[in-house]
Amino acid sequence: MKILVTGGAGYVGSTLVPMLLAGGHSVHVVDSLLHGGESLLGVWAHPAFQFTRGDVRDRSMIQHAISGCDAVVHLAAIVGDPACARDPGLSRAVNLEASLQLIEESRKAGVGRFVFASTCSNYGKMSDPTKYVDEDSELSPVSLYAETKVAVEKALLQSSDRGEKWCPTPLRFATVFGVSTRMRFDLTVNEFTMEMLTKKHLVVFGEQFWRPYIHVRDAARGIKLVLEAPPTKVAGKVFNVGSTEQNFQKQQLVDMILPHAPDAVIEFVRKTEDPRDYRVSFARIADQLDFTITRTVAEGIQEVAALVNSKLISDFTEKRFRN
Image (cartoon, rainbow, N blue to C red; front, side, top):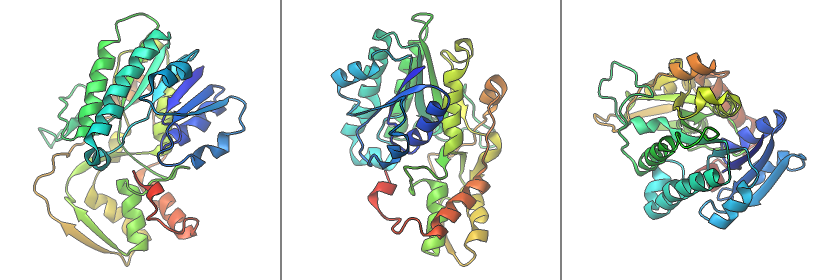
């Protein structure tokens, strides 16, 4: 397939692109390079790779980039609650309005598959903390980031009955961790590991609250799997992407990191209310698409710890490592 990947220079995108190229696909990346483009240097000389620096809000650029494409993977976004809260207007323009425009242009261009990167934070807070939420559970977004993702999901699913060729699939990702060529140290597992090793001190807010986690390579593998699955299995369906066994409380993450940083001092700040508290079932993607993870949180911690200890990166506070 010829695949357009928006945000292909990002944390997940730069991991996905080489996988797609290795799988025999042609890949056209569109990225504004808000966090730099060095992550794509490894694929630059690949004959099936194409790059356009541009903003997904630019309709004419998108029309040109999407021409002749069989599939779109839409990753480009202002990612995360803090980044969205900093500039709500920009976040709505990029995450919502540009996404709806991309869906419209994709359909006009005759694109078959459209994979949308959404988030498990759409679930917000569990109504029953003893149970797992799944794709049929009520969505309760408590942040602008999640609100925009829910709105795009809704529009995408409403478009799913408009032609046999059109195959839209929203993917709700667990919180991502692990080493990527566009590294991030503002994601929970990566941040906790880095801070416990380098600062010897970590402040944890709400250690009892739950989140699911997935390695960046497994997140990319999930996208590739959906792209290559028979349309009848994925068209108009939502999939949580992760592993049910990889739901953890923040306290459990700290306990897994401590063997790598035994001298770290942990300060827990008790919170009785966190609007995001959820354990997620990933049974659907496992049962219907045979998806399994290849790396656990414990293995990801070891991987990030090895990177930190290697001294390959000299300054973990650089802006390029954060959104």
